Length: 135
Ligand SMILES: [Zn+2]
Image 1 (cartoon, rainbow, N blue to C red):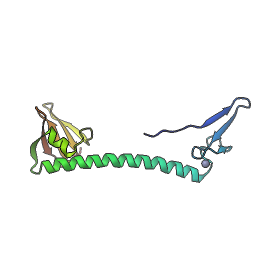
Image 2: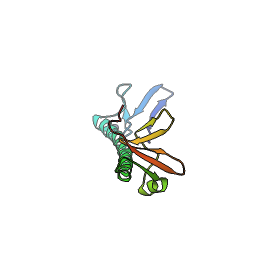
Image 3: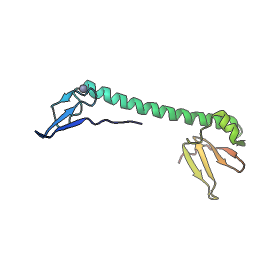
């Protein structure tokens, strides 16, 4: 989650717009749309934002990779059932997948890259593999 703080102070007496640098809070008296006191502050601010999103994406990519690895290891032959407990014990995260495929019969397959699964009855899952799946 990113939280952006807007630090604009309005002096009502003079109707003068007093702005502060978004990085170091120093007063700015330059252009009306200026948000930073210096290139240094703008770079520092933007680098931190990018770092946050990069860390977030890295975490999700790791989850997806781990999910794919679990499916692949449980399903070396290309088609096999696995139960929910086994998947959970391996650390599978059902909230993350790369794409969904719904068959004409209405079965929904969830994929982590080329490794997929569909839910059967009794907490069982059918694991499948899909090559050249990308549409
Ligand atoms: Zn600054």
